[in-house]
Image 1 (cartoon, rainbow, N blue to C red):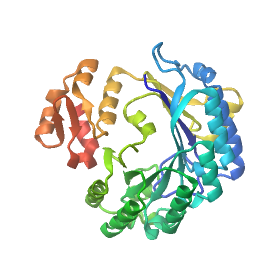
Image 2: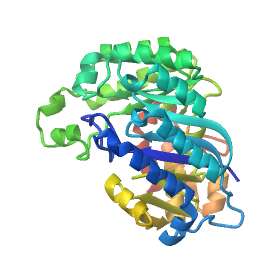
Image 3: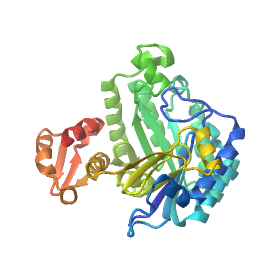
Length: 391
């Protein structure tokens, strides 16, 4: 069985980006240490707290023991924390779980990266930094409510490389307000010139969970809501990113992710392969193979649950056979390696070949022997294609 991945949520930011629909908040730095202490307690007491919440762990006799090989600290902006607090989390994990750690990732915003911090991160064991670059165009960064500017990205890369960080991942967002074909090409060109080992490109999401999304849905004009690129342009941005990254030697292994050979995210692959992972902290999610559960989103409510000895789990669901099949398709087809038709048909007693045949004929999917995958030119409409497959 595969080893566990651990995710820790740090739900604090310096400011709330206009497009953000995450459960994060801007709080006083004085609240950082109590939160980290609570997360450390949750980690060390996780077996008892799982039992109190009705979580079966481990779910089966043959399920993975508490052996971990990846850690991902995300948010929010965990790089806001003092290195000592981040080290406290890693110590708690190492003390609690058996481990042969291959990948320890920290999410960081460029303007928060300083030489002392970077040196301390490497000393603590972090070997991968995922940086929220989002754009290399100051006008777009400002419109999105980001704190950093283009110059901060260059400064951060120099600091991280000098500290010995061997794996850097950059995020870009296709569809930011004020973004044009020319400015998107500029961001791609500058990213490729800096040569990070890993790249994620996310399409702008419009929903009522963000200030920008709500403004768009209400036909308002705040947050540059009327300066968003059209959907057709966003699809073109994505396809240009595919082409330029491929020509620069990056391999696309998932709809939103590219890596130089050998640098695909080991931790994130667990999500897409439906391997077990545990999440700690406010709003963190977990998956055992049989159950999915999520912690309280509100940091104050989470702290209260931990301090009173209660379970912080907000929701718990047993994964049914039907929902497991849907996950196999949605998550499996996000990967460019595709899904194993024979295994899924055997495991779930379904006939996917006949359902997929019209989609293959229409050029939306490719089938090679026992492997079914999305057609390369249709990745930007993946959700629509997968919904058709599930009908």
